[in-house]
Amino acid sequence: MPNNKSAEVDTIRAWWRLEQAFAAFNADLRRRHDVTGSQLALLRIIAERQPVTIRTLRQELHWHPASLGQAVQRLVARSLVLREPSNDDRRMKVLQLTDAGQSLLQEVPLVGPVRVRQLDTPAEDLVTMRRGFETALEAFALTRWSPDE
Image (cartoon, rainbow, N blue to C red; front, side, top):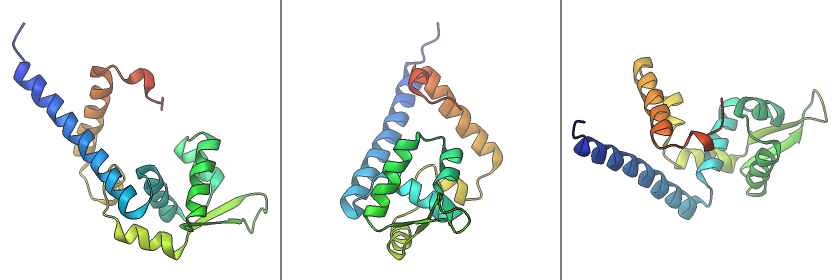
């Protein structure tokens, strides 16, 4: 069996760097803006689709209804998102960013996975990245805790 110790250690270090970068960004985000990375991602998604119904977000994001409802409620409570009845169907709720929500998105750098939707990343790079993430899930034995597509 060939000695891959150097490659193995380099791979672990690369994963650790990614994990630490996300943790540092999320801590900075929380400290400076009092929002989590998940809340910021949801704000960006709402901004891209607004006005958008909660039902549409649930269908597109595959979030548990209670989890999505709680996340939206936190953004509404922080006056970052406005939630109103739909003009088409008063039973449905429509979301859109407030001025404060828009300002927050302008202040916070575009970081993390959401960035690949905003940049002109070549398709072959996206395929390579996806394969790398899928390989990591398998190699780290984390598939059991990964949501199915």
